[in-house]
Length: 307
Image (cartoon, rainbow, N blue to C red; front, side):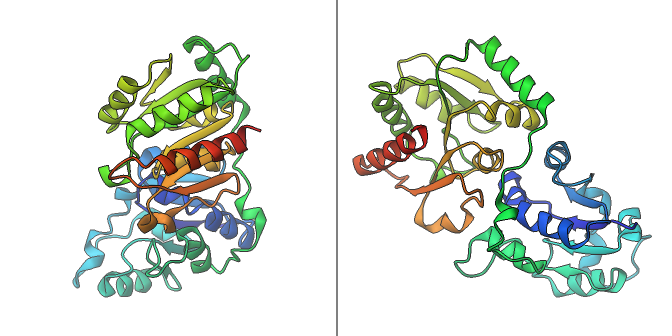
């Protein structure tokens, strides 16, 4: 059967917010393979987690000419093969919308985020005719056993023997305005150590070196470091984590999707991007300076999840 093709070239968190909508599409067209055109590493992750059947690089579609009038090059094979196309890309350009609809009749072209305050994941599921109140779409993804075993092996090599609970923190984010002060993470973990005494893993992505260094300078206890792991390995590690705490980022969305009890830190202005996962608890904090009340609320949320 001809596949359903979904186009979403966004960052990790933006694409993971589309998981409920992708599940709704699979339910609506159960016999049709589900293909995703995205950034390669993100597409590969969603294939590894069984969310989509096939991934292809977004650039392979050659959509640039759709933004101007004139002869179109030969259509990409993926567009030729698709029974239906859903594009969360190009919706604000009327020329793109018109030309894509000409070559893919019935294509759904919608913005990747709503104009109002509706949660992004709810907006995406509505664009494909899904119901936001369907709890099935919000269940954790299945992390395959080989990935979970690889994650456990890495943790063992890093020094975790399994006798303590793990707290994984992600102090970085895509921009400074999204980063809770490093002192907040250190104080939160210090308060937990007085009673819960968890083991700590700190994740460092490609742009997080400064944030991680600032945290380690303020946190005197031992912490395992996870530096730029492949996303499937990180998903495997997350299956063994008792609680995840991180800023508004793709890694936080992955933690929620993988079923890890999570505390995700947002500013009030970005709360629409909160995770869809039922096990993820958003907490609104200040990022320009550390507020003692924010630390107390984060600690309370983490303790709630640990118990």
